[in-house]
Amino acid sequence: MKTKNNNEANKDTMKIVLIGLDNSGKTSILKCLKGIKRISAFNFPMPTKGLDVQDFEALNSKYTIWDLGGQEMYIDDYLKDFEKYIKRASKIIYVIDIQDVNRYEIALEYMKNVINSIDIETYIEFSIFLHKFDPDLVFDQNLNEKVIDDFVKKIKDITPPKFINSIYKTSIFAVFEKSTIS
Image 1 (tube, rainbow, N blue to C red):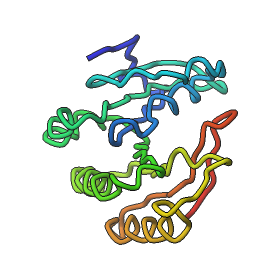
Image 2 (image 1 turned 90 degrees about the vertical axis):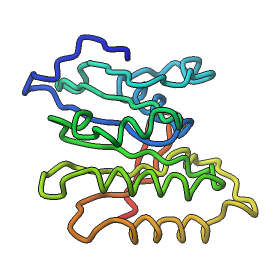
Image 3 (image 1 turned 180 degrees about the vertical axis):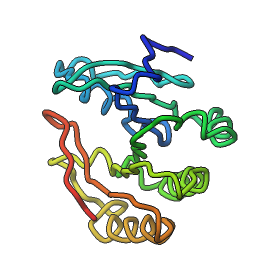
């Protein structure tokens, strides 16, 4: 576990938990949130091993981002004691690589397990980022608008009615962008 100036107890700091499968783009999103704009910083990202906590300031606010590595060997441990990871968090961002069609079902199952691990009575903002939705995304037989629409429907089907969430298309093409789906 790597930590960097963890100010979890500081009430002026917004805690955000980034979670999703490996290679979904969580660390790249974190870099964008920190204001890193050098394209070379995104060329060969190293996988997050376990938990990486980053503290920083942006837009006159303080943030603590918990980036949970998405390799299979860590997932069960996160889910066993999920409350430990989301304690004092104001937001969870679940990241899905929209271009990784072959792992949609695995990403959905993991998301379902994450949602089931959260006490719905406790308010925590939950955002789903359909990431790598780059402007130059070329659709092929495995990835097209119908496949994405069907996938979004599956996401909506597995989220409980009382579970407040938002779904966004995201990209780090140029500077990080997101647009609301629902």
